[in-house]
Amino acid sequence: MADSEITRRNFSKTLAGAAVGMLASAGPLARAVLGANDRIGIGLIGAGGMGQFNLKDFLKTDQVDVVAIADPFVPNLDRGLELTDGKAKGFKDFRAILDNKDIQAVIIATPDHWHAIPMIMACEAGKDVYVEKPLSHTLAEGRKMVQAVAKYNRIVQVGTQQRSGEHFQKAVELVQSGKIGKVTLAKTWIHSNSSPAGMGNPPDTDPPAWLDWDLWLGPAPYHAYNRNRCIGSFRSFWDYSGGTLTDWGVHLLDIVHWAMGVDAPKTVSTFGGKYVLNDNSEIPDTLEVVFEYPASPVSGKEFIVTWSNRHTNTRGPDGHNYGIEFYGTEGTLFLDRDGYTVWPERKPVGGESVMAFGVIKSEGSAQHYPHVVNFLDCVRSRRKPHSDVETTHRSTSAPHVANIAFKLGRKLRWNRDDEQFPNDPEANKFLTKQYRKPWNMI
Image 1 (cartoon, rainbow, N blue to C red):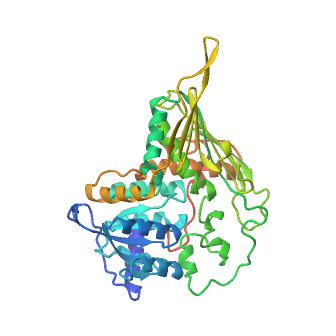
Image 2 (tube, rainbow, N blue to C red):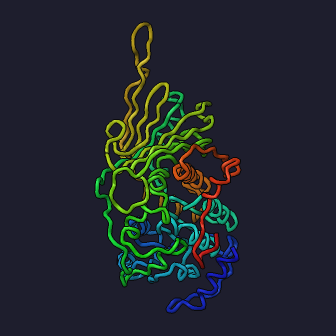
C-alpha cells in the first residue's frame, strides 16, 4: 500500500484546481455511523454508459448527493455532470475526489484495467465502493482487492446485479430445493453476429483533444491511440479486458456458482479462435469453455459447466441468444434477465411416460435498482451486500482461468485454496501482469 500512498501524496502536491490535501486513511471508527435519513455523498469514477446508468439509479433513490465525477474522456464527464444539474464538480483524474471528506462512497465504472487501483485507493481513503464487474483484470488483482476491503473494513458491492433480482433468487431456490433433481450440467452462453467486418480496422491516430489518452491507459502498456481500443470497444483488447468471457461470463457463471453452492472449478479447457472477423480486435470470435467442478453441496455430485460465446452467429439453446440452463434428473431450468422456465422430465411409470409437475414460468424482475438500494442499505448497516467482494472475486476467477487456458492452448488444473495452477509455472505467470509506471501499486 505504500506505493499508492506515495502516488496520492505526489499527486496532491501537483494537481491544479483540485482542493486535495494529505489524508490519513479514514478507518471505520473515524466516521460516525450513518443514520437512516442521512444522505450519502457519492463520487463517480468513470462516467461512460454504465457510469451514467449507475448514476441515474443512485440519484433515483433520493438518498445520495453526487459530490464529484472523474473521467479523462471529457464528453462523458460533461454528460455525467449534466445528470447532477451542475451540482457535482468534475475532474479528469479520479485521485482528485478521493480526499474529499464529503464523499462516503464511490462508484467505479471504468474500463476493466482501471478497476483495482482506484478501488484499493478508495478503501485506503475510507470510502465504501460500488465497483462494476468484472471485479478485476487479473486474478492477483482480485485477491489484492479482497484484502484491501478486509484491511480497511469497507463495504464493497460488485455490479453483478442479477443477485438482487427476485426472479433470479427464486430460480436459485428451485435448483437448491431439488425441484429439477440432481444437476449434472449447466450451460451458459451469449451470442451475437458482427461478421465479417466486426469493428473494422481504423488506423492509429493522435488522440482527440478532449481525451487524456495517457491517463485513460493508466497501468496498461502504452499503445498509440486507436478509436477501437477506447470508448465502447475496449473489451476487444487484452490490455484492458478479458473479452466477452469476463464481461458476460462473470454475470452468468456467478448465478451457476450461487445455485450450485460452489465457487471454483477444478479443471478448465478452452477452445476457440478468431476465425471470421476481419477487424483489429484481439479476442476470439468463437469460444467454447468446459469447466469441471467438484461435488456440489446441492446435489452431492460433480458436474460440468460450459460457456459459449460467438460474434458470428446469434442462435443459442432453445433459440435464446444468451442465458443459463440447468439440466437436472427431474427437469430443466432456463434463466435470463427476462424470466425463467422449468420443463419437467418425462419418466416411465407403470409403462407410461409421466411428468412429476407442470411447466413453471416466471417473468423477469428489476435487478439493477434493487442492487443499488442494497448497497446503500449496507453502507448504513455495515452488513455484507448481495455481491460481496470475496464471492464476486471467485465468480471472476473462473473466467480468468478459462482465458489463461485459451492463451496457453491446453487444459489447466486449478487449486482453489492456493489460487494457483499446481506445478505449472508457465500458467501461473498469467495470474498477474506488468503495470506501467507510475501505476505500480499492485
